[in-house]
Length: 62
Image: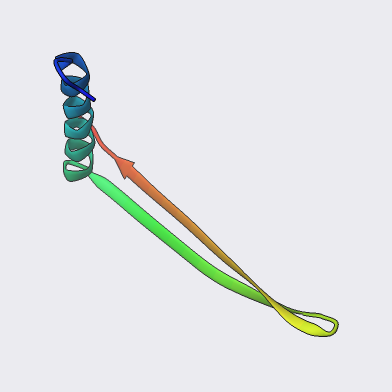
């Protein structure tokens, strides 16, 4: 797939390096997970609705 195409390989390596450096060198990070469910009566059964919310914030300065 990447035979003799150094530009593509170098760009992928650069993107991975930037991503890892950003996460590992983060000055401030926060992750929030919220899960909840609601149970309602729907004749002739009972239905359960599950909700999950997820958020991650990373602050990075060079």
